[in-house]
Length: 99
View 1 (cartoon, one colour):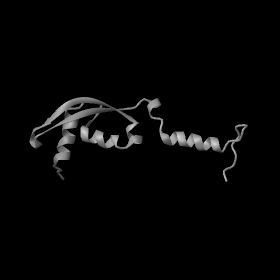
View 2: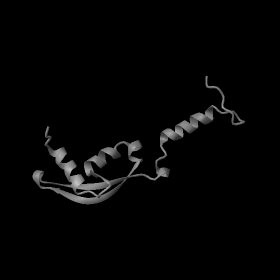
View 3: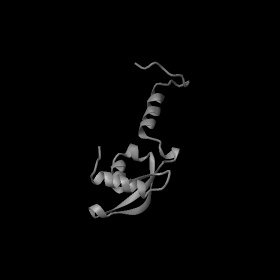
View 4: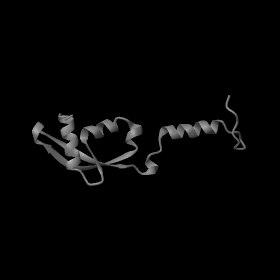
């Protein structure tokens, strides 16, 4: 099967204009990731270049994506788990059975 369309063209251009060994995404994909704070914390984005898509008369910024530093990935979920664990510990630091 052959698949054609704007999304396929954009994906092809992100790959062909990207950096070898790196993941490059469009500005729209970056926006969608940033709408999910838990997901967005896991990555760092670096503006790469403006990609011209002559077939659809568009210009799109591309971004390289790398994993965020471990200290930046601490999520609210991890903090909640730590808080819940401390609720079930007695003063001596021994865990009590949950109700």
